[in-house]
Amino acid sequence: MSLKDDAFAARAQGWRTLAALHARIEAELERVLSAEHGLSVSEYTVLDVLSRQDGFHLRMHQLANAVVLSQSATTRLVNRLEDRDLLQRYLCPTDRRGIYTELTPQGRALLESSRPTHDRVINEALAEAAELPELKPLVEALGA
Image (cartoon, rainbow, N blue to C red; front, side, top):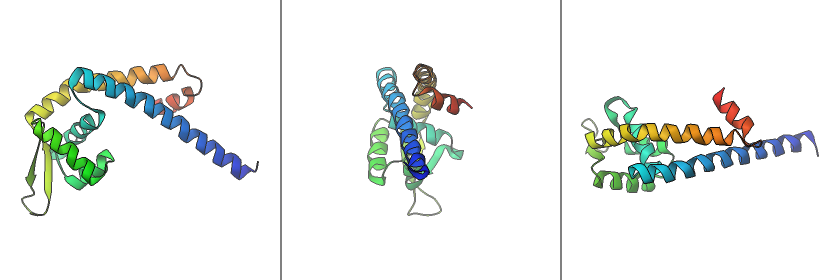
């Protein structure tokens, strides 16, 4: 194997390790957030992203980019959250083509009650992953 092949193999292994860690954490987050708060990871992420914006709102395309979903998947997700009265949409007052999505008071309350659960699950999942030799270096790099 050449040095170039070795570098590619190392990057590919690094990617597989990152994907494995992500999958472990996301699966546990999905299970616990759903059971304890009635939220999927994607739903939590939308609420969290919106909560970190000035005015608690974003345009739909900005939200899609922030949560790494397609426009159509983001629209379906926002529809579900809007049906639960966790989000609302309205026309941008300065550009009638733009639609903002923002948290409702119920959405903020659910986010605040679920955030400690989210953070706890991530911390626990990372601690468990650090016990596995193949994931330990990545977990340590995340903590640095």
